Image 1: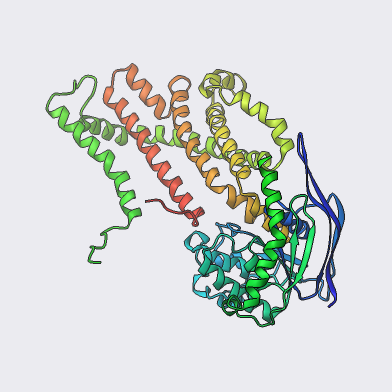
Image 2 (image 1 turned 30 degrees about the horizontal axis):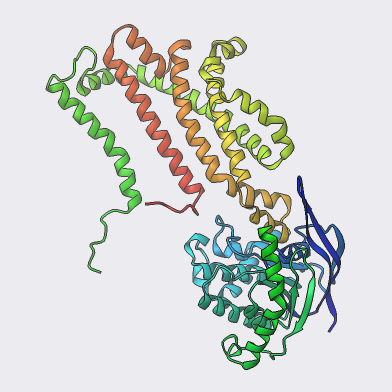
Length: 262
Length: 261
């Protein structure tokens, strides 16, 4: 598999007034082209920081992230799906979905046509003129997904997009995400704190250490594609792997808790 | 599930109530006058006031006063709102602008604006300009401060989205900053409207030869009490109507606003 994203010695220190916090301590990581990579780690381990650096929203203190461009330079390199409440409340559903296209100067008719296709994919075509506050949490995150996919980036960066949803909605959205992803085969970096979610979605899982964050272990997930989000959880390997990852993660979670109390 | 559907939409009911409640107050007043519960020398009945209003309308005097006050209010409002919104946006966006301007704003904001009317007249003369200026000075603070806070309280995630999706500067402005700050910009305009009514009447009491404030004052001095009440009612109606108009503009400008029941 060719390399799409190269993360090298990535270090991030947040300088506070009295203390400085090391969020990332020299992370090195390689993401393959078309890979679905999940990152799990205890809270505060710097996984969101890493994703934000990839998205160009933070600058690293040291090290670098390199995303390799393939083909059309007009396509955006990456688009991020934010955790929640990131839809613009003042834009209608279709304007939210078409936001990235509008920013690139694509005329209204054309961008609405493209946006409509993705709204249909996520089953929200009839809500195109609604405002976000008129939608449920699950519908909002569907719009967020559509917004990122419509933008047609080479890499999708997802920061716990379904964390705020209830269990059933979460499974439905995971299922929809995999279906859309399998059509487009984009490189995905997906952050979650849920081991089960990482196993359900990912090709590989990066387990991170407690702060300052680094890669503790990388685990291959051998479930084939296409996957059935609901069936996969019934497989015996799923439970075994879930426990295995938890054993790796457990000591880090405890360390993170101790650090929080200190 | 057999609940009767409401006859009127909630918004329509709200608008009706805004018109009906002052009318009820007037009716109670008239009844109290008939019952001699109010001294007619100090508080004339609505009918007497109506007669006064009729005379003022017929002679055209009322329209002159109303027109003059309206003009001063409108001009003062526009002259304040445009730079107020602009400076507020700049201060909301730039730490440097805040560092430079915030002390000046904070130090001068608490001055009761009517207190500097003599100063304003000293610089701008006794003509229209000084009245427009005093209204503008009173309004600009409220618009400016609210706009600044409106920009500063925009959730940072919206800036992240705009940046990640490659928003050029002008799109960031029209798609994120302006709509994000708009609810508080309108809050500032509403507060400014209320204050501008107070200030214009006070300024016209002491420093004008026309306007509703002048009408109230001169009627008091000449003891034409019903005309004084006409002035008070006209300025009240003016407040109600302008507030109503501003709310309608706000409804149209902020269609994503959640209506609360």
